[in-house]
Structures are given as structure tokens and as C-alpha cells.
Length: 49
Image (tube, rainbow, N blue to C red):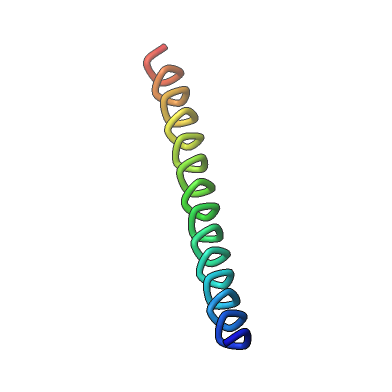
């Protein structure tokens, strides 16, 4: 019983860490895209000037 609980806990930890990694990757991609949007807006403003 204890071994089964430990195994399920390990599986839960693995899935939680995998989800956290995906969330971090998503956050990084979103911040990168927002930065590129800001730089693109600045380029457009310079082109307009």
C-alpha cells in the first residue's frame, strides 16, 4: 500500500512539474511575443515619423 502511494505521489509530482514547465514555456513565449509587439509598434511609429 505504501509503495503504491509513493508511486502515485511520484507520478503526480512528475505531472505537476511537467505542467509547471509548460506554463513557464507559455509565459516565456507570451512575454517574448509582447516584447516583439512593443518593438514592432516602435518601428511603426518611427516609420510614421
